[in-house]
Length: 61
Ligand code: FES
Image (cartoon, rainbow, N blue to C red):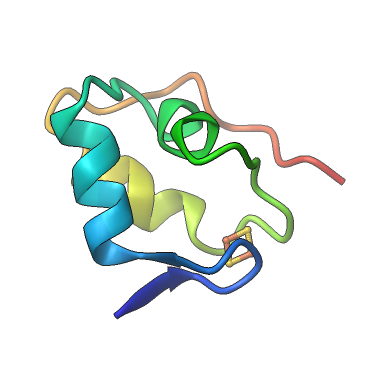
């Protein structure tokens, strides 16, 4: 399932990033060499991270 349409990130991509150490939503995007565009997926990505991440509140324009 695609999580981020702007960056074509799938659920498995997010899981891989988390398994390899992503600790916040920003880390997930960085892991795949991208950053949020529209930001609609950010809450979902943030919720998927066990430790949570309050730092990723700004969306790249
Ligand atoms: S859907 Fe992920 S940034 Fe737009």
